[in-house]
Image (cartoon, rainbow, N blue to C red):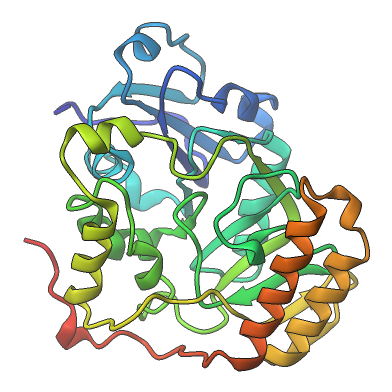
Length: 307
């Protein structure tokens, strides 16, 4: 794809999705264009899905082969007015949500000055880390890690991160970086519990075949990203502060751990597997109690920006 993408109607925010034949992005457009705060770019990796695309105001469609993140690099690099957007959301295409939720996400991100954030996940979602599941006691939790499934990045942080998208199909390792750059840092990365989205398919199923066909290993991509920034180990997601649903501030890993545990266990019936959910809540608490939180910014001298 070489043509420049232009959105003639200015919106404050942008959503860009890598989409296949079963993409759920149509549900995100339930609000009239005039009433929503975002434009949408649908970057298809499936030729059949691209050929079936129906034109709609505020929506651009392109065909870009590859994985999620290298495909996003090529797609975003062709958006001529990318610098004009306040926040950009980069969800997987198997996220079930609506325009009201997306608009609320952008509103919260702007109100709190967040550089990177994500909606919480409904209790019936497929997940990698339980901590990202919706925690009803909170409106927002400040964290050291925002996952690659549904990240929302500020314009300045996206400009910082974009060159790294080119070298990864899976995106593994990006979530170690974007919470620790100068454009983000402490109290600028969060899980938004005021909203929740449903991740409808098993983790890692999106674009798996494209990655395998390219002979790429997600773990190798993660190792390369860690080596570039001299990161010795995997980052464990931790919540170190939060704002409760009624607006009260909570500070400290231990306080957050106990508050999250009580909140989740107050209604275990909403989880797909209650026994597993109980084990996972205990695991989150243990990590909150014993894991060391590192919020140090990445050293610019270690930052070998891709050429």
